[in-house]
Length: 186
Image (cartoon, rainbow, N blue to C red):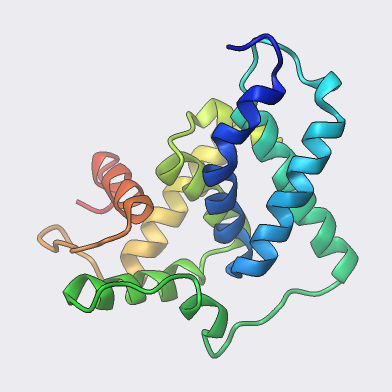
């Protein structure tokens, strides 16, 4: 770790953006949230405890920013037509693209808490303990949210023991792999 913790912040920007996208499902809003998070982190760097988990600290700031913005708005933006979801990225034209679209449709049906827990543990590789600390809940709550999210995804995607997925997105593969290791998707 460098002497100045600000030197480490830039290393976490891609993960922050991925987490923000999973929460907002809108690239422009996610970019704004990441920028707000970086400004807050930069100005409050004195509150960061050297030797602790910088990524968890930044994710906590981002998460709190997201929920603060939601409270201020007083309502959730609907994406019934899938406009925001479809604008997240352009996948190559092959079978994995269709399965990714199915995954996205299923993923957005999860509750905010389940999506958040699944992204932190499944896609970002957080331990249950780090994810619980980031979300400000008990470890058992995170485990429950992840398990329910995986089970709900399997149900929505109509997966059974023999089903194979051809995904092109690394974050999705991490979530699916974690689910298979946990016995939910396999």
